Amino acid sequence: MLGRVLSLTFQQVQKHERGVNRVSASKLYEIARALKVSPGSFFETLDAGGGDHESTVQARNSQERNAQKFLLTSEGVELAHTRVKDAKIRRKIADLIRVIAGGAVSDS
Image 1 (cartoon, rainbow, N blue to C red):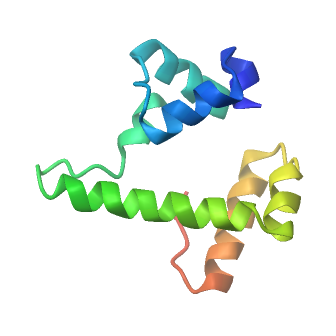
Image 2 (image 1 turned 90 degrees about the vertical axis):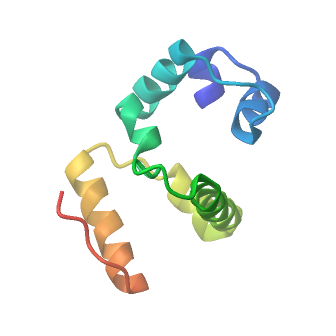
Image 3 (image 1 turned 180 degrees about the horizontal axis):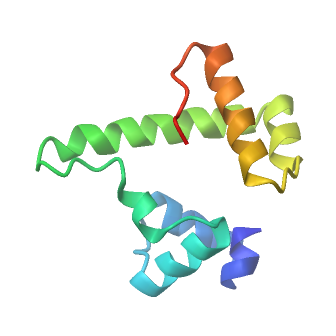
């Protein structure tokens, strides 16, 4: 779906995801628009204090691998195909999942 919005093939999207191809500023903007987030949201987990960038990258990679593993399960596929258009409801669902999993709830 993202590839279609960006006029990219599946393989091109994969290369961007893996860091084989760099993502230009204009493409990053298009990706943010397609995902309905601000371009800055891609950088929120980076350490602004100049700390250990490598550990931040490793943590993000670990989170992405876990998300990919989950999305390959039948439950993950079902959730990925569920369309909840209301952003407030999507946030409440995410908060509910976080509470069930034992994590903190966001304040948004």
